[in-house]
Length: 498
Ligand SMILES: [Zn+2]
Image (tube, rainbow, N blue to C red; front, side, top):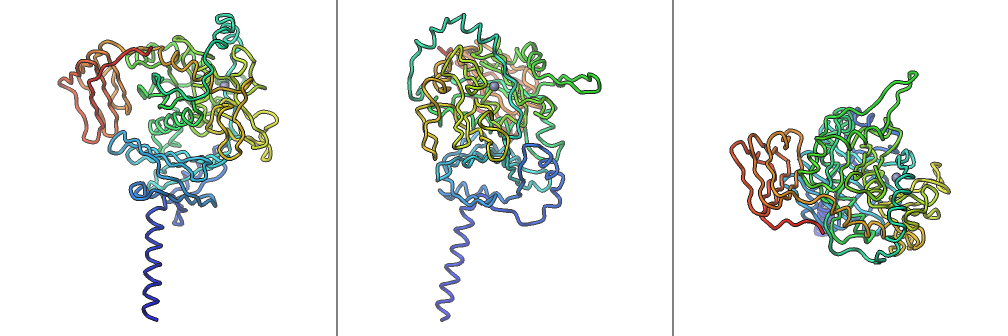
């Protein structure tokens, strides 16, 4: 009898330890009173459906191949897929739902842990509060988001006249992902308002640079999942703060804001364009105030962008949850909205897709009819581009049509044109005027010959500082790298993107 009891206890302890070893997320049952300010901040956002505090055990990433996620009355398994190390305290981890209906992408930057969770039609964000670094999962109701502000009538007329419709019909109609190509390099800048918004005025740890990295990692995943590129499509050239206050004015006591005005000032700014040039960025995105300030989630300067028009602006609260960062890049690459919200020129098949029976839509589609914002008719924007040759993972229907809804085709066709907009510089000198170490966390510089530093250039803890040069990198007096910084210097041949 004693023996049996002993065995039983042993079994129990094994079960408990296995449980602990693979439980990545579980409900937090302790006292969350100290986090009330964070709860208030999260709940006051229109797109927040619910907030749940959780335990997050990142140690499980090292010792289990299948990880358990328990939150929002769900209990499911993800596979421990891959980890992208950017630095000792800076990495992104990917896990895929074993049921095939989504994934989790967690980005860690020092104390800040953020992530995106997609599960069927649901979207969640994982965030860290300032009070005892408590982890919280925010359930998002995408139907509460405003649309993006994207009108391209004049751009469409220009493009149709330019190409006379020929380029599209003559381009290849490859039905599979590009294996090789140049990454599209992006300069991401953010305003002080965006930075403050994302921390809720200090109640969240959320670092905007970590949020941007996480957003770009997910966006690259959408290019792979929708069979557009088999390599990471977008490469961050630089993340940098831009000291700009969003335009607003009072008109008859009503505050008027204008996203298009802010985009235009961003586009014309000489500092922005000098960074774009130095860091070889094909397009530039400004992360600015929230959609409640603007009334819109984002705007792109052009459909099928050129050197002078490859700019967009995205509201900070829409960039990841609502996939608006990807949406605006989609426009620059020639993708348009769903059929009801776009014209047929210059690419009749360049629309986003809506599948009403499944209540979902792709990145370029609005929540438009027959979808609407009522509970029963709302259609979730999924992290996919329209593509008739890729089936929805669980509904098993094509995610587009050949004639009208094939964003994947236009994205592939224009990918290298956009990637070739800016080419690497021959030489660069980094001084404290070009490299602002206090707000910079991510630098990825590619120069054909020589990179030289001049004066005080300091790489802060948790910063990523990647220098690639064809001939030499000269770090002169005044260059300093803090102990936890991630500095990588590579000598390799750097060529123009053809
Ligand atoms: Zn749009």
